[in-house]
Image (cartoon, rainbow, N blue to C red; front, side, top):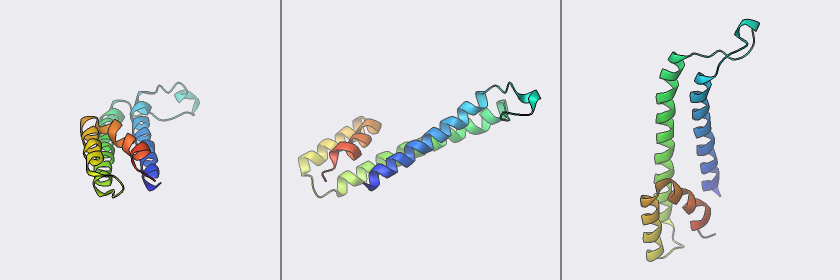
Length: 107
């Protein structure tokens, strides 16, 4: 159960990072009316895009490493199944890691 909450936190963090990117592209039509958001334009894109890429890459790496550690330390699966899950996780990293946490671990 703790891995599902980890996946939820990672996905929410990724969406926050994507929101930082997309907010820099937003057009502020109410700027003269004194409302709306303050867009940073090009400066915001220069700052938020590398930050979002870094955050996304970090989330991606942590998810895959957590899946591999979980596969290697799980005592409920046998050697052949363990090798299969490791191969799936390395061949299709994002899909394999999420599939392991959602379906692979035995309760």
